[in-house]
Length: 98
Length: 152
Image (tube, rainbow over all chains, first blue to last red):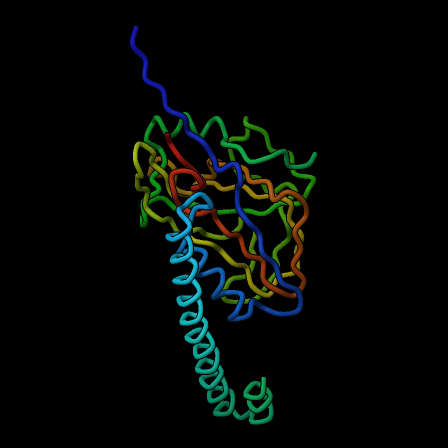
């Protein structure tokens, strides 16, 4: 008798959950999460390779963070103008100063 | 009854062999629903339930609504002899909720519509709370050892 078997499995680690209270995620938090998705290096990788990967990750995180901060600033400008043009200059100013 | 680890629903394994689930990007529409610690899922769970689901909460663009949030499929791929799939992380914004686990289910199983066929149950390892904030579910690294669903 011939049989073929394969293990179908769900990740034992499951999913991670990140939460915030009284605020959203900061660009710093999101940049770190972003890099964790892009780059993964095994703890058992040769030290030279691991060090290179870590250094590359740090550089990527810095670049991603810079652009995320710019996205926040640019979107705030867009929101400021939309609210200001809707006739709410005081509210718009509050948002601009966030 | 609390959550007792991550597991795959038995009905899902059968439906896989029947070709009922398409995890490619643009394929079937999978949702993730959040539950409090009173939820009682077992391997015999076959469908989504609203029992013990967290209440609707949050603000646009991604509030938590009854039935949960729609996941974005990352098409299955392989590494060595292992096939695996992934979903993009999902964030519910401006929410106040406490969840202890989740159910992923397929709303278009077998090319149908409005289906609620269960896929996997996820245990968060305790209550996770967001208060007027964001609640983000982070899927594991998509590789042969860690991906959320793997066939080795």
